[in-house]
Length: 212
Ligand SMILES: N[C@@H](CCC(=O)N[C@@H](CS)C(=O)NCC(=O)O)C(=O)O
Image 1: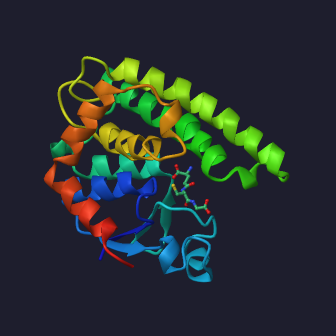
Image 2 (image 1 turned 60 degrees about the vertical axis):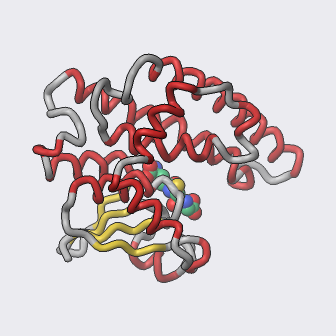
């Protein structure tokens, strides 16, 4: 098997899982969710010493990490599927802008909310870190909603892997601890509903929901 996706159910790796399914490339998947020993297990650390998902394993034993890099790689393997706009175009730069924003700004801010113990020790400090993260998420999602408003998909009229990447964080924004700080997002909700109806996405969500 030429490609192996290492993933955890519901993690940011979901975007890459969707990308691979949309691409129709041959791949196998290996799950490292919390109920399977997780990304902290010795087995996973031996595969990826960084201990994070997603990771994409190649047939030569090398590994590609970082969701945005994997999304770009998968899209480039199947240019005819137009999973991302062609390189050297302004639309491609727009896609990179979205993916950079998600990877560098949105995703790490969720970490302060879900894993404050990585940023602070005392209970008070952890609560402050989390509260600060929630404030930032509130502004980031308001910004995302404004940018998506009036568009069928993030980049315009057609689905792209930017939508798959955004899809993950819409799900995280719906979690109990985050939801109260997020203003209504009708444009984002509509995009997510379109993405969720795609056969590849239905399949991936079914696979990720399977018991360990
Ligand atoms: N910058 C990396 C971050 C990857 C990352 O943090 N993945 C999370 C899941 S969403 C993870 O593996 N967490 C396990 C851990 O932090 O121990 C990317 O964008 O791919």
